[in-house]
Amino acid sequence: MKHVKTTIISTGSWIKHHARLHTLVAIAVFVVGMGATVYYWNNLRQSVEADMGAAFERNGEAIGSAAMARMQQYENFLRGSAGLFILDDFIPQADWDRYHQPYNIPANYPDVQGIGLSRYLTKDQVPAFLERKKAQEGVAFTIYPEGDRDVYVPVSLNAPFTGNNGRAKGFDGYTEPTRRKAMDTAAATGRPAISGKIKLVSEARPDRNSMILYMPVYERNRPVTTADERRAALIGFTYVAIDTTSFMEQVMESAQASGMAIQLGDAERPSGDRQMYESSDFDTIRGREGSKVETMTLEVYGHSWIATIAAAPDIISEYERQLPGQAVWRGVLSSLFFAGLVWYLITDRERKYARQKQEEVQSAKDDLLSLASHQLRTPATVVKQYVGMLLQGYAGDLSKQQIDMLTNAYESNERQLDIINQLLYVARLDAGRITLRREKTDITRLVRDVAADQREAITGRTQELIFKLPKRSMFAEVDPHYMRMVFENLLSNAIKYTPPHGRLTMSARRLPGQLIIRVADNGVGIDPALQDSIFEKFTRVENALSTDVNGSGVGLYLTKQIVELHGGSIEVRSTPGEGSTFIVRIPTHKPREA
Image 1 (cartoon, rainbow, N blue to C red):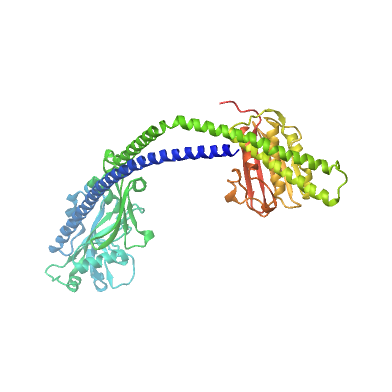
Image 2: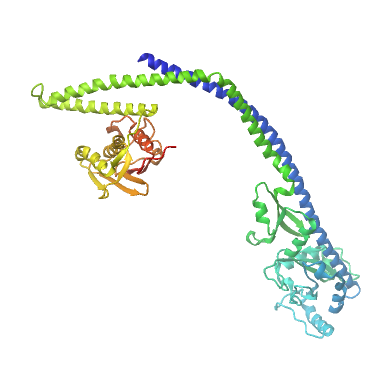
């Protein structure tokens, strides 16, 4: 026996040592190859990122240039319009319309919703202004919203354009804080200033956001060097009302920035009310893998804006984007190939010898199994017979103390035999020497027989066993001997790990092609973290009753292996302190051979 054990250990050590050595060499080759792959991949990735960054910057600059070019055109419009007041400080509406007609605003500038003049008036100047407007245009002029204030800045002139509902005339934009801030900035600096996010009173589409670019207009021949001088000489503001959506659509089309999307917001408004424009494909582009997104704050015409620009990966060529990925899979394949080749070359010479060693190991295990069967089982069986004869009175009457001692010895020997049998079954399982002898078996009757065999143990712990079995027999093609072991192990565990006065339940039901048998208890239960390990070999779960229960830790391992040999499955559902339920599923017919 010592020689067999030494052979098993030395053979296993030899195989493990050489397998470990071959694996380490192959891993080393693979690691070197992957190191080179990662280095090459990183260089390509950085190159692609640099190219994408350059393309992003180039396209972003194109968008910015297109936006500023368009705003510069509007600034030029306003400077030209302001120049009219050098000739006349009270231009009629008809002359205003004739001056702007050649621009063909609807066709060339669809984002413009109005070009006009907002007249700057103190409260004392309002009556004279209204009289002059009525005399000039023949109809009464109304300023709204109504109210008494020190300064009025109503729209005095407004050229009608497509989409303009004409309601802007007479509107005092100075009553609205966003417009007033832009007007004050323009008046103080003498330069154009733009408003933040607003809703135009003349906008025919209330869902659209807009902005207004203001240009201060001063009386001719008046000094405008300082802020006070400019405020004193102020006539009003020429302005361009701009629909933000149309403006950005024109900008993106002009920039020809394919694969780019933008989200524009007013940085001076609350975060939940900032957004003025978002490209229709913004979320799609931003959400694509490998997309590039940058957010920046811009100062344009005296107002702060937040612009988020998203670029799809295809702003650079698909071929270039694929280079890093191609480097990875080529490198992985090459590393695997060379590592596998090295491993094969090293192990090829060892295979025959390893096979021979495996055969020796298997032979040694078989010898050990045979030896254990005779040297372990035979003495225990003899002890059982002699103790049994003593208890039956073959050697004369015994005292109560002698009977108790012999009974304890008999039960201890029975437990030893049970452990030996389980270990032998494990050895047979591992050696593949268990052969099922299937026959048509009444599972319902088998369950009841198992319960009857363990009735004494159940009664001894004053437990209650409940059956939930169908009245009709349920048959399955199984090995009755091994299937009995399954139910014996499950019921025995339920008895052991359920406190006295506990409740046990055995139930069965039929589903198409399979039977489901449940063994449940309201015992100590199993921690969820340990439930996956209870079917492993030589595993016992610590709990409140485990110290009082003897066992080898192979019962549930054997149970699982036997069920799976039948083509079935077993699972456990348990809650600590509430009990456990073991669910066995077995096919009703023998599975087809592969």
